[in-house]
Amino acid sequence: SYVLLTLRDPQLGLDPANNRLGVTALLSIASPLLRPPGVEGLVSVSSALRYDAPARAVRLVQPRADRIEMQGLSGRDAERLQQIGAVVAQELLRDQALHTFDAKDLTVGSKVYEIGDITVQQDGVKVQLK
Image (cartoon, rainbow, N blue to C red):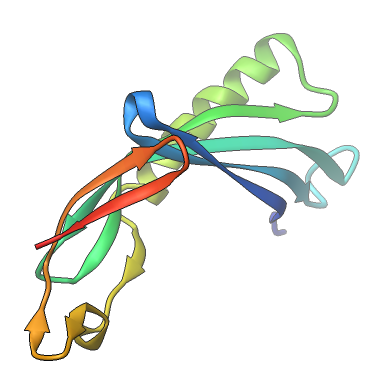
């Protein structure tokens, strides 16, 4: 048996007040274990960001499932799904690299830059170069 998760139509969200960015997407779950064998819904996850200098990677920090809604689920089942989603988001997404830079990406002419603070703003993500 298997479970197939599919995410579609992702939308980026910026939360400058909490210095987090998020993604909301349509979610499909298909499995012969489910009745009916397919369920549709919506998922929103968010995270803060940090730069890992030795790996030259922007990593997710404190990721969380902010919202999980599935058609046909309500009450206790919906609460359980939200709790499971929170654990899964923490375990699977924590410290995941969102982007990894090559050395050439951080080099302009003979100057090699380092990434400093990463700040989520109303209209984008500001990355400090040192």
